[in-house]
Image (tube, rainbow, N blue to C red; front, side, top):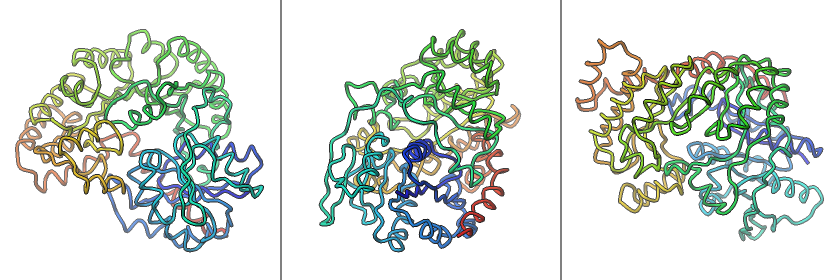
Length: 491
């Protein structure tokens, strides 16, 4: 079988890489068609850049590969771009089935399966379902009854199959096949890695709150063994010569015993600086010291709001401001850079709550400050709250299902303080990184009506959201453009 994955963006996606590795292990031919989406980024859209990688080149490459199956893994804010290209792909490959998976089809399968270009979708984990599907297609067997899949038959009838239990031992799957992205120049000197699937927390604004609900009674968080992680990283070092590792787990450390074993092996065999994620409640002196000792150079910590009641009541983030400040101090005192993350435009949030967030930001003194606008992702608990309390209506929700908007644009909520949320989202990263003598001027801007200066600062402040990552990606863009065009023209 010949399977062609299609993806959008300038970073590699672990779900696609794992499926590619699994399918290659089973003897199938796999390739990736990548649109870097240079002009489609939800931070800053510059359509002119799309001409560098036109759809005509992508479609020619897809036809030349002659796939038996096209597969896509989709997040909500990219759905409209996948849909746009999916329709074009269906025109040039009308008899090739298209299957979609990922969090968006998992969250809103009824809406996604109605798309004319979608033939199948996968809900939840895809390894077992995808293996069964490709095997059935290769042998000419029916695949309408495979668990986790929704399948349209020739009459247009949708076969909605049940969800299969989670696979507990994720070590059984091969390491991600990064080569399919590396050919496009997407992999640089900082390699992304995951040591687990899932999250123990149920933050109301996060898609994990929905995914956890799909698997009630099952262990949603599953961790790779230390030996499996080290084995993967040794291969990464051999093939890609990285300068740093970026662990993308929602929360990196939940098990002290695992961390102790990991730190010893990592320091001896990998010895590269790395970045990881924490919540304030998980920060402990001993844990941070172990991380520092084995090479952790930066930690991103989700604080979200400076108002305790809002965090606990609306977001299900149960920690005090005192804990936030204490956690930040522990990280900074260990000599680890702190990246703080905040969110504005939450339901029930007032301007005074936003000022509280700014004051907390002052006290923790992070190396880098990220701010976003709350975006009601489909099926999350906070989105349901917004629907029930009139913050969004059905029209707005349908736009969300189409992927319109995002956490870096204006609020999609009917929020009385949406303008304030936008101003704080723009100003906070600038405020946190500015000398003290500039801060009074920025505070004055927060009190002024939204105008051209705020919109200009929005653009100028994009690099400050995560300075190191922004410039790292910017430097790689020429290589991505050159390598992508070279691959697409090689027919």
